[in-house]
Amino acid sequence: MNKNSIDPKKLGGLLDAVSKKLGVPPEKLKSELEEGKFDSALSAMNGNDAARFRQAVNNPRLVEKLMSTPQAQALYKKLSGER
Picture 1: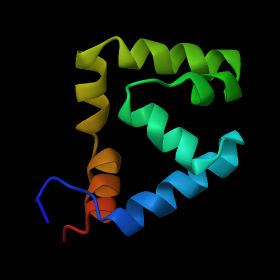
Picture 2: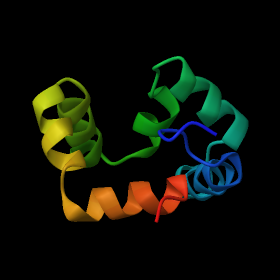
Picture 3: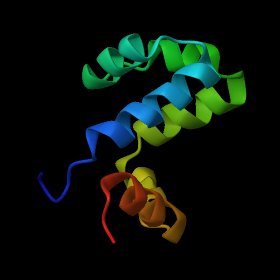
């Protein structure tokens, strides 16, 4: 497995959890995310959360800043199986 890839079992669990929260089938959510679409996720969010998400997606510096936080790094390591 590639160092930067996430364990498929963990990814499946994450997709299941998010799909339940959003009320979107995991297969549909995965397919949209792979295509770079976020329609189902955004339609299930409240207006403020959807606006913040769009802002983050459209601002690579903000995403970089968020991903550099210790919490994001810990989550990534947990999902990717890194120790």
